[in-house]
Amino acid sequence: MKKSIADIMAIRESMQSQIILRDNVDAEKEIHLIVGMGTSGINAGAREVFNALVDYVEEHELKGFRVTRTGSLAGEGHEPVLEVRVPGKDPVVYTDTTVAKAVEIIKNLAK
Amino acid sequence: MYRTHILVCGGTGCHSNNSGKIREAFEEQIKARGLDGDVCVVGTGCFGLCAVGPIIIIYPEGAFYSCVTVEDVPEIIEEHIVKGRLVERLLYHEKALGNKAVHSLAETNFYKKQTRVALHNCGVINPEKIDEYIARDGYQALIKCLTEYEPQQIIDIVSASGLRGRGGAGFPTGRKWQFAKNQVNDTKYVCCNADEGDPGAFMDRSVLEGDPHAVLEAMTIAGYAIGSHQGYIYVRAEYPIAVERLKIAIAQSREYGLLGKDILGTGFDFDIELKLGSGAFVCGEETALMTSIAASLVPVLLSRRSRACLENRPSSTTSRRTPTSLR
Image (cartoon, rainbow over all chains, first blue to last red; front, side, top):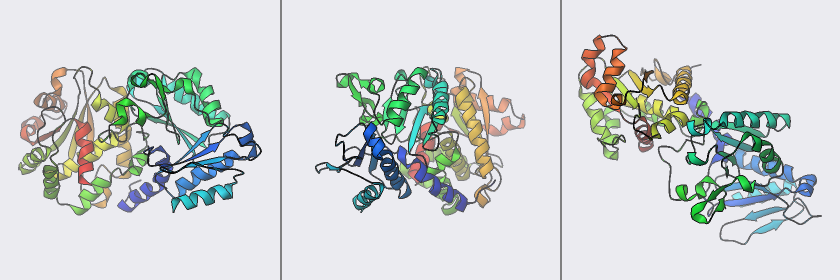
């Protein structure tokens, strides 16, 4: 179907959040959130935490953020573990993360 | 919403090394594991570094796997997608860095100092989906040109930008467009030279395969600037993937009303046709190329073509940089 200029703008808007993940962010400037996804981490809900963070980045079209998975970050018994690396600062490790806590963390980082 | 994107290179190099089968294997196994709501598999254009293909890149990590085979697919899904661990043995190992594993394409020695301009969509979007091109600001330059500028203003901007032909001769693009615009003629054509006969040169192919809409958009802008309503892309028949993706792109653009009559309701008409060259090296030369295109058209065109025809060579860098400089 033929599109109007407004239609093209709407497609651009809605598609941008879907491909924002593919932007290569500058490793020295980006805020890096790493979710420990060893077996026990996954059991404790690490996947839900990871998914919530990626969804937040996409929904709010945050630039300069990268959410990645890794193997176990240790801290068994206090999982899910979330490590936050802000350039120029010491890394911070959060334990017993929940979806709500993760969203609060990224919300504060994005301010 | 997808949380993981698996990008599989679909350029000619990787394709001839089975990347199509690798993509299918990912699609099947992702589906079989019920991950298809979370993970999308995307066939893209060329990432570069074809010698270590087939290449796949997985986002959000940006992990860059090289020399991947169909047999590696289950391990990548199990380790990377499910458990979140990089598959170290498939990461690209950079000789210049003492055979160290490189985690992402941007970290390789080759790309570290580069900013991709003409190829900025290659290996990022699915070239068969117009919406992904639009998401990366595709067709914004065309909209701007058609709604905000008179043709002469566009030529002035292109002249001022200093953009020159990327085919080797470096002829100023703005001046070429001005000559074509100044011609008093009822029919003018925009010709895109994608013949690329030069041995071992594949930059046109990379753009055509990886970002075909960029070529269409730039040609439409050129058409508006010089007063033409018809464009031809002269492309080698030996580039089957490029031809296929161009056909898809042209069909999508026509469907969206970005080619054809009354583009986006602005009253401007422009359409593009493909002409396949049959591998004669000489047809990369401007007058030979135009004669070759004209030979398959009505004879009357021969008498009109000579100076009214505009060669935009190569499609690649010129087309990509033109919209970039207009933004």
